[in-house]
Image (cartoon, rainbow, N blue to C red):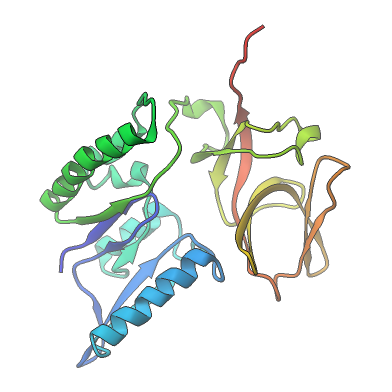
Length: 255
């Protein structure tokens, strides 16, 4: 089996699965997605289907919430054979295949049909490139756009930009439509502005709020008096920090 690599939000499988027994192959997969989220539920369902269709000969074991480290650490563990799978961003995939960050280049499209046309031509080229480097790409996920940003603008570095919707952080200078520069991390100090993921009955919700702690509870506090704090009991609600805010990028609408 070749390793399977995917850009941004898909799977990567390595050549050698660990053997749990003479009749079972266990494939260990690391992901940044936190436990309890819709994404984890979906891939766990897929794992059950794989197990059923292989009559128990193949099992997928997931390590959620970045417990295996960042992308570079996951790649290193895959190369060492400690993991057989992961989800990696294009910047770290470049260490495997130089053209992996091709979607980080600036593109100008008039509509989504043009995006689909380019993806239909470029994705197979990426897959072929990974094959040539001993990997196989499952998929590349959709993202809104890529922006060229000087890495020295933000400290720590910005791993991605998140478009803000709403005015809950207005008084912190974060406006509706801003691009929030986010440093990917699962840890944050009280008082920092974070990107948090909550899982509820209606599915996952990603929110930008100021993090505060009160005993065992986590408070996600808005910077706008019109919005009440979100009180989270991590023992009852699937909750994960996906990153900390390190700056904003705002479109200039003119003078």
